[in-house]
Length: 121
Image (tube, rainbow, N blue to C red):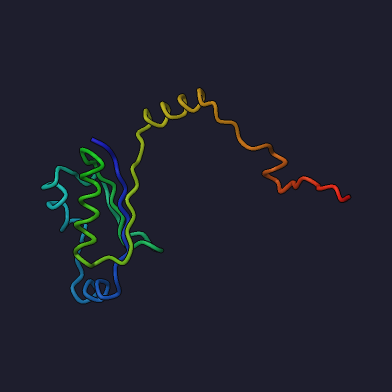
């Protein structure tokens, strides 16, 4: 199983309906997640750009994408974002692999806006 974070912002129409009939949408969608082989670990309602956030386990990226598509197709959200989260072990493995990378960043002078002077004739 892999860990994902799903964030969504509701449409104004969805917010209006939730104000008229308050409910915990995370509780309501748990069965839909479970039916697709995923399980919500934790969820909440952030203040800001997104209105709902869930962290969940899913067997693969295709399942995570299917969940996001199914939610989007329902029309209750105006924006959404799914992020694959690495476990601590995966993060450490990534850092160790980065140590072996042959990539070298651009020279610092170039990063700081240094421009090569051109000579005038």
